Length: 184
Image (tube, rainbow, N blue to C red; front, side, top):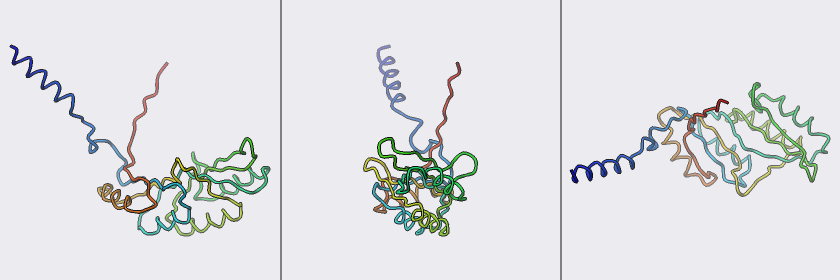
């Protein structure tokens, strides 16, 4: 009986140590790889990185810019940028902005879509000059996150490739997380 209890205890410990979430069973968006750009990397360098590959870029997110335009130009800046096809999805994602509470400086947070297209990149760089936009970098966070579409089944291969570039902070699968809403 003692041996049976020891065997059950050992099996319990072993089964408790195993995990169904070994990295290969986690759900992810097929064909998607997300890449974090190191803080301080300029948008032009980011575009140069994107242009090395023949991949579609769904979007570049987590960007931040300030403008040297007067504070009463905030709505003009937002309208100007949201009028472009690559700065919004027409439904949920639009360029947002605010005036800094102490300096009254315009700060915007765009999400740039389809930036694998050279004409979109060039237009963004031109718009930056026109709106007097300057990249705002924070040493503690990335200078943008790129969502690449790669061939399905080659996601892990592309993660390894992307990680070899000096401007890349991290690269990973685009994991699917389920959120449960609490019912009252």
